[in-house]
Image 1: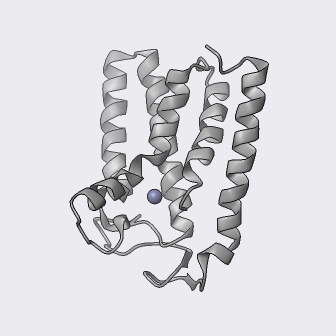
Image 2 (image 1 turned 45 degrees about the horizontal axis):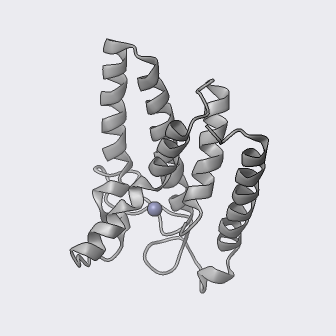
Length: 168
Ligand SMILES: [Zn+2]
């Protein structure tokens, strides 16, 4: 997924806020949006340091095992301190990170089995990994889905704003 992570993260965060009765504030919504694109921050790194590793999917910032370790630590801390804000934070941050990884599994893939197996696991690809070869991503339904996500998310934000939900 190239551009769809942010709108997808917006919908997930709104749903989590509703389900877990988390206050709908710019802080919690913003945290979800940042987490939804967090695994792609390595792109900025590779551009800054001109690191040509092939695909940023090979960076540890795209490894589920890396985030599972942090999730485990965060849950342990939560059981020690039992703060509500920490619970909200864990739910919003890690759900968005794993949504990102699931969405990236559709194209190119993610190292789901690292460190046990070093390959990318993905459904479709453009020549980097195994899977169904796609000639042109911009003619693929997954690309159209990304655009649809943006259209619905922007309309939803406008509606929420008009209703006064996002004005605090
Ligand atoms: Zn990504």
